[in-house]
Length: 193
Image (cartoon, rainbow, N blue to C red; front, top):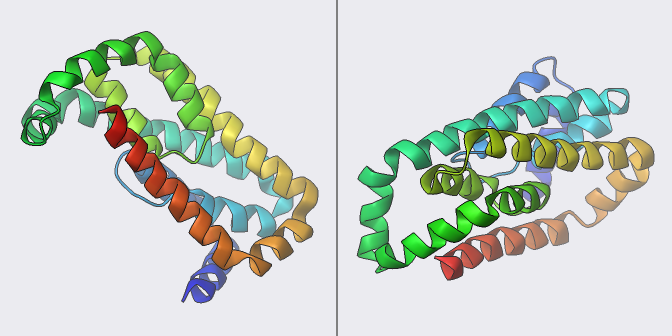
């Protein structure tokens, strides 16, 4: 099944509307969707290496715009949805100290998390909940997401087929590693809260 999904994604990467699909995935991933845009970014760059930086740019712009949606979810829906959930699990009182630390270290949290496979939606929503300065959030997001996607695109542009061969040879192992990182990211958030 994983191989079929990979082959389908590679085929989609060459489709004439692939850029719009990438933008949609990048946007929604920054606020609610669990799958990172890399699943489309990688095959799209491999299929069209001469457009690597354009593809990274699309990914960056859509991701930052989606991050604004995540920020708004945290800012406007926390009282109705988030706070009752925290209270139910007994984290309501701990959240105040988390919020103070987040505002103090928020720019670094956004920069570091935006560069890593850590679920970015957690950071965008937490930034809104904590009331991190919107201009600070935007600048940190642009820098972090821009670097992350540009580095991936540049490596794929530079090393192309060997990277593709590596991905195809170790697809199952890479998927397991990705899932471990994803689950680990959520576990880390649970420890912090």
